[in-house]
Image (cartoon, rainbow, N blue to C red; front, side, top):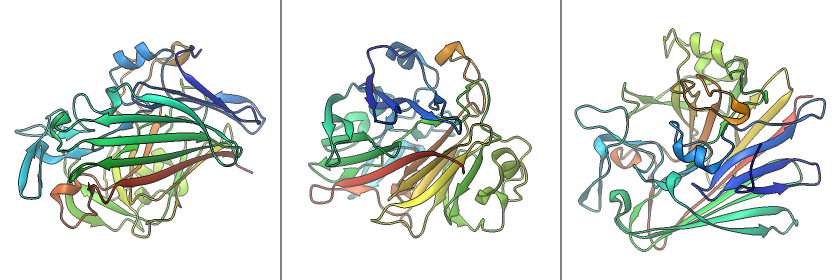
Length: 347
């Protein structure tokens, strides 16, 4: 069960979303299946202490300053080279920088305030001030992340980052979903459908090469015609024998307006998650690093493929690839973003 240290939002349909100040995390989402049964579809733990001790550090968290990897833990900005924490498992001879560093946004205690939007829907706003030099990044950034639970059973996430000087900012939410509602099952039987996209080619360290791959005729395009397992193992582009994926996709037509970038569906429950975003990339990670050592809700070990993270964001390692969209912000150019997670059932 979830304890009182979490912030609860509930709509008139009985759907509930839970959050915590630790990492501005989304920690639970109770939505109905095709028979109206409410179940939690977000992986996680029963207490904040469990999140702090977990091997998988990023459950439900806001990730930054820069989500994803930065090669060799360095970047060049305005003629100056910045050195970051080398905290990724990948990288030779220098490990790469991952998800904002050792003490990134996912480990910070954010301030929270309950809010209501113009439709009288309930929300919670988290705020945090990242000091100049934190984790090696220049400039002070003031960040606000707001989640609303809407009457159409959606979580609408808005974020804004304002800086006092030029710096980098690329944040996302790292929730793992399992639409079955039973975390003893895996997500390989889920069906994923992505908007028209290209694959951001990455090397063995999961760093972008700078190339975009046409996957329009490959199963890793995730066109909704087969489940996650078959889409991976049938891919000629990937050519793998195990369904372990951490893939970055680029959406050429995504801009200032929100568009549908991903749909995830699970046949047994009938649940569907549709994700809308105004961000140009999506990271798809099927939790292949989970090994059962973390014991999640209902005392269930969180094993390989127990959940899938679908993370709208800017391009990975963007500062080291001039051909990628920039993630630089400045005092007159803040980061503004929105991700909407819509839950319904397949008709």
